[in-house]
Structures are given as structure tokens and as C-alpha cells.
Length: 269
Image 1 (cartoon, rainbow, N blue to C red):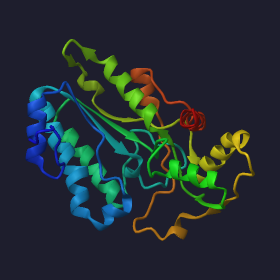
Image 2 (image 1 turned 135 degrees about the vertical axis):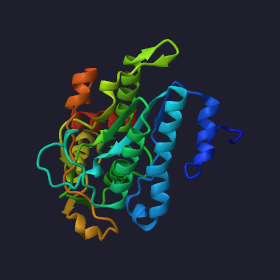
Image 3 (image 1 turned 30 degrees about the vertical axis):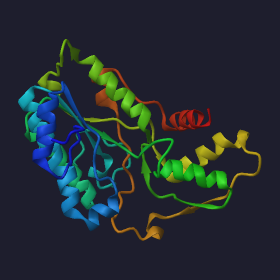
Image 4 (image 1 turned 45 degrees about the vertical axis):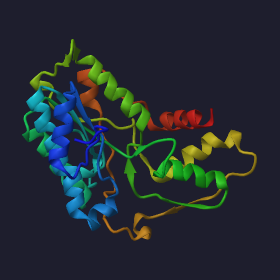
């Protein structure tokens, strides 16, 4: 264990030591190698972080009686659906990132700890280098922007995802621990309401920024995913149905268009 309590996810024993020292009531794993192309180039690293480490966390969670919350991805699906995927849909990942994340889900389930596997989709924040903040900066610069039009998901604001995860934990909180009945273990989808393409996101951002723009906003040029010549293949449709989490915990995320505007309002405050 390091002095700071941090662990290298590629070193299972270090991870075990940190969890055993902290003895948390909940182990929440939001860590992953999420760069889809990097996963193709560095498969051993992707497997260590996305597959092995979650299983180690879940094993230690079972040992100390902690509930385990593990985030997974819409990329466990192949994208051939035309309506939102629910938890009963058959996973069939088409790239190594999705394959390692699916293996991570199975590692968590196999550990037999009380667990929630939360699959989410197209997570974005107000800052950083992700698609949405990068797109906002590009649009504000005023130059034409090329945006993929043939991929659809459920855009999810990271703040709302964290808020609903906290609400789930609060709903199962008991003095000094969390209580999750075995029937409630398993996979839950939690993505922004509705479905949208990256082009839809661009147009929504433009619509939200238009009243604030001092000059004309830029032209958005639709392109196909193939134009990027990415290393890894991406699924074309990965919108998620949130029905199970709504039924069990009476929680749901608002429509992604509203969430995008909330995020922009927070950024502009």
C-alpha cells in the first residue's frame, strides 16, 4: 500500500492492500482504460485495468462485506439494435475495449459480492478532453466543425451519473453498511434519457449557445465515423433503456438535451 492510499490498478496485490486497509462500506470503481483505440494497441494494459482489477475489487469487497459498484459501458453491444438496449440484451462487443469491459463485468459477478454493475453511455463533463467539452470549445472558436453523424448513444452528464449513483447508495444505506438484497444484484443501465447522435449534440449546443453568441456560430459538417480511420471499430447504435433502475430505485436521468443545457449553464455561471 502506498502512503497516500492510492493503488496501481495493474498491480492486484497493491489494490487488495489498499481495500483491506481502508475497509470501506462500498467499493465504487469508476476507473477504466476508456481510450478505445489505445485498448486495441495495448491489449494487456486494457485487460489488466478493465478486466482483472474489477474482479480483484469485487473479491475484496466480498471479503470485507462491502457493496461493489462497478461502471461499465454501452460498448459491450455490437450496435445492431434500433431501439434502446435493456439489461436482457445479449452483449456482443466489436472491439477490445468492449470485450475487456464485458470481461470485467463477469469478473465482478463471479466474485459473488453484493454488486451493482452500472452500464452507461457517452459520459461527458464540462471540462477535460472529451467529446463534448472539445466540441464546445471548437464551436466557440467559430471555425467549421466536422462531427460524426452516424453513431447514436445516450449522452450522459458525469455529474448526474454521480448524483444518481449516490442516490442509489443512499437508498440501500444502513447503519455502518449498505444492504443490497441478492435479487437486486446485477446489471443496471443508466444513461441520459433518449437517444442522440454526435451531430445532434452539436446542434443542441449551438442552439443553447446562440442567444449568448456575439457573432454567428460555426457551420457543422456531418461526416461518417469511417472518415476518422480509427484503429478500433465503433458500434453505431448504443442507446440504453433505464427501465430497471427506474423500477427498482425510482430514479432516472432526464433527457440528454436538457442535461446538455444544464451542463452548459454550469460552465457559463
